Amino acid sequence: MRAPDTNADATELALRALVWTLAEPDRAQRLLDTTGLMPDDLRARAGEPAVLAAVLGFLENYEPDLVACADALGVRPESIVTAHHALDGGRFDL
Image 1 (cartoon, one colour):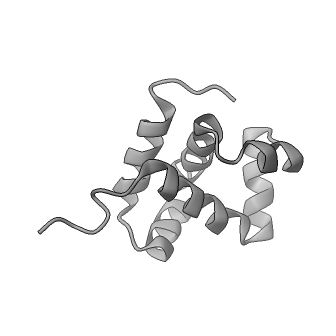
Image 2: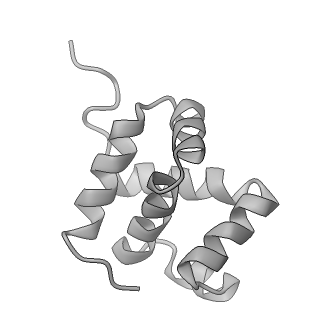
């Protein structure tokens, strides 16, 4: 039997990670500062692969957040990294 997160849809996982990230104001501000996104832009483009990849990349680049997010979502940290690469498609354009 496979682990429950092996078939997780990258977009769904990224959206869940975005919600988790935005739930804590300091972490949400770090996301905005790191990605250069403005709140209105994030709201308007939240479902776009590039934005979702940026969110997952943000988590991937800070292991404590990556591990905490994965734990909160009930997935392995590797699943977030895999979803990031699936959404990024080998490039990063915001």
